[in-house]
Image (cartoon, rainbow, N blue to C red; front, side, top):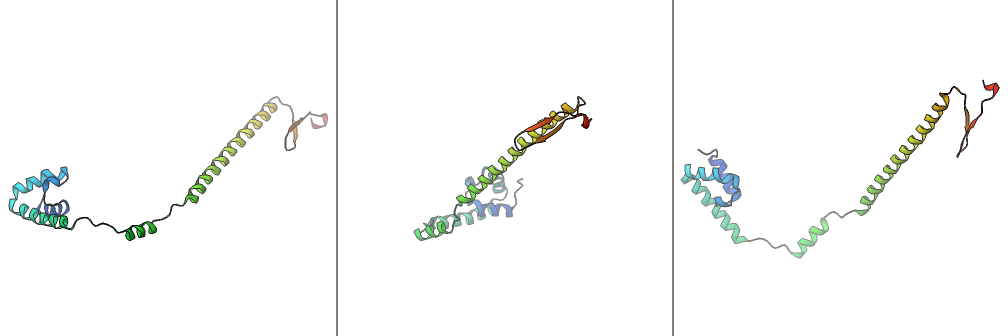
Amino acid sequence: MSGMDAARFETLAGTWGGVITRWPQDLREDALIFLADHPEAARCLLADAQALDEALDVLGLPTPTAALRDTIIAAAPAIRRRNILLRWLSGAGIGAALAAASVSGIVVGVQVSQVEAVDSRSEAVYSVSNDDDWYALPETESQS
């Protein structure tokens, strides 16, 4: 006994047509079982679907006019290349900012580790800096 009922068979015949061999492979076996179990109902449904197939074949495929083609192309959204470039540049800017932050973190980490190494010898170190250089000042007796 097939798992297909008359309503399902009718829907499939309306969808795939009146020739079961044109139906998708996974539906054919159940359709053939339904046909064997209910030959009169199945043949009637297939005949109706076949008549619709023939009527559609007579009509043929419509050929779009040049005006319709031009209208469809004109209505299509335009490719916005500027947005693509802006998205790429914003991604590159974010990447550059992250790279700069990483380098800054490494520089600060190295400087902090150097200061900790000097402090570990129990010496007082004073430093001053300008924009380019760091200077360590020697310990004086007034600082001790």
